[in-house]
Length: 382
Image (cartoon, rainbow, N blue to C red):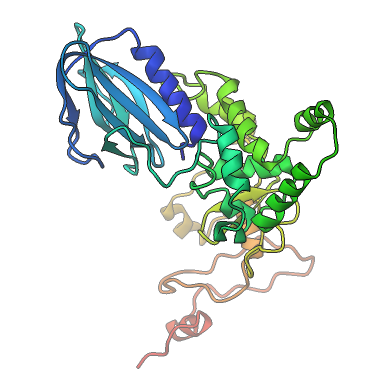
């Protein structure tokens, strides 16, 4: 899901690619776009963008007389902007702004999953706090002066998704921030932040030592600012849709989120949090932590498995199954032994390869229907 670095980079992408372009005409909306029609048209206008947290504001400014029009976007799960040929827009382009060129191009708001929205006007959403990326002093003050709020009764991993205080933080950022701060995700948020506030108010360190401590050991709120800044600094084109190496660069930057060896749990909002070590005292009861396993690449020199047709299975009376992936084997080991669901009729039992030194007992090729049903827990015939 796009978070504050993605929105910031999208705004930069628009300003850099469209800064020298002139647009004309009206704004075209798709039939399934999750936003209103844009009542704007001009013979010549400019497009500029600005971001704040998880919102991006687009301003359409006429070069001649006439009022400007602003739109505020939320990207949902998959929103982005692309500049492309007007004759061949992306499949999920839900809003299009056309350039005055020959041939014309279109700046498109693209959203395959259709969770993104836009609204008319220039005002930011009022219940969102200061941006963690661009308004850090106001963001820090807003959190530390409101610790009595019930939002901080929750685990810190859940509090970090509250946009009233952490505007711009999402799922991957909270995992990276807590991992670097070495804070268990299910520690109570108020406990973590009150300790930070107490240390800040009662520190007897000199200014130079405070700055050194801040640089070498940033606290949770500082990381809420510096970690998004890292994403922006990795590469200004990191989220440029025309760059095919975007996701690889982002994946290399991650230290915790979706990284093999890290554990994960579902929070009370059913969102997955990735972490290392103990989850903390407020971890949901009854859940087992799952670890991310690395996916092994196939050996290019390994022999290609034979494909067995159904006809050959009937002729041979059964075929040996190909080896299963390691992840599947682990899942099957974890599953309890018990009756399997499914249709039992007309199926033959396939003899597995012998593992004992004793002679194999003959396997009965067929079972009558009654015994097959009983062996699989089927209801008796009425």
